[in-house]
Image (cartoon, one colour):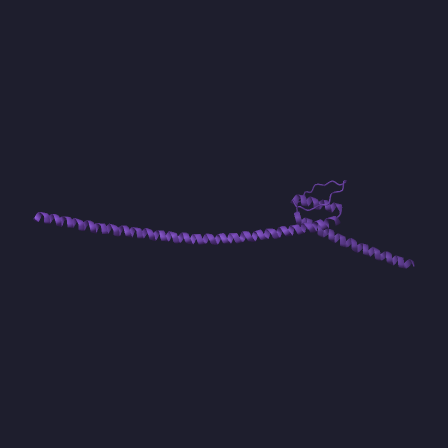
Amino acid sequence: MMFPQSRHSASSQQLKFTTSDSCDRIKDEFQFLQAQYHSLKLECDKLASEKSEMQRHYIMYYEMSYGLNIEMHKQAEIVKRLNGICAQVLPYLSQEQQLQAHQLSQLQGLALPMTPLPLGLSQPSVTTSSGLFSLSSLLASQAQLAKEEKASRDGADSHREEDGDKSD
């Protein structure tokens, strides 16, 4: 009878060993899964913070893009208005100045509506490309010349009136 008893104690000892071994394996596996969960949670948190940072950058770039788009439309409106002003002023310039303004606008690729050139005039070549600044300075100098001409005409008219008064 002892024989079966030793068998029973050996099997229960083997069962206890197996149960304890299984518990240790489960415990190890649980700790491994817990460590994996912890690292995945950290990675998830990191990705969530990166996502919010990317969204913040996206919003910032979107706002910048929107602002630049509005600024482009403002600049286009300013250019359109300036072109209209130039188109109104150009007919008052002399033919030579109109030629210079036309050549400057061609060099700069401006869309200024120009008056057609007289048949006898050809376009001389322009070697400077000073752009809108030179066009504006050209227009300013033309305005100054017009003021001086008007002043000299007014002076000449007053001399004629004085001469006419003396002859009476």
